[in-house]
Image (tube, rainbow, N blue to C red):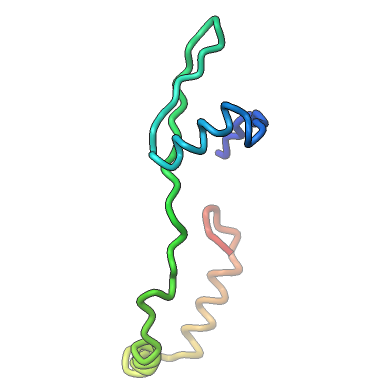
Amino acid sequence: MLVEHPIINVPPDSELGLTLKAAQTRGDSIVVDTGEERYTLLVVLKESPRDIFAHYDPQAAIAGLRALDDAFAGVDREGLLRDLHMQRAQESSGRSD
């Protein structure tokens, strides 16, 4: 079940906006005091985007694709594809498209 959280818009250059940015960089939590209550906000550490091609070896990828011929030796490929298409056509819950 998807839970929708309320969104509070905070100007990025406001005191709270700048404090949130700094906490995210360090992976810290911050305490917000409303004058009536104190709330602790857990700020998730912002990770740098990974370079998905950093360790990509095109020759190894090609070798892996060529190895599929050996992996499927003796398999009825048309039958396998037919079965896969039938399974994907089912209205299963939790299956990604």
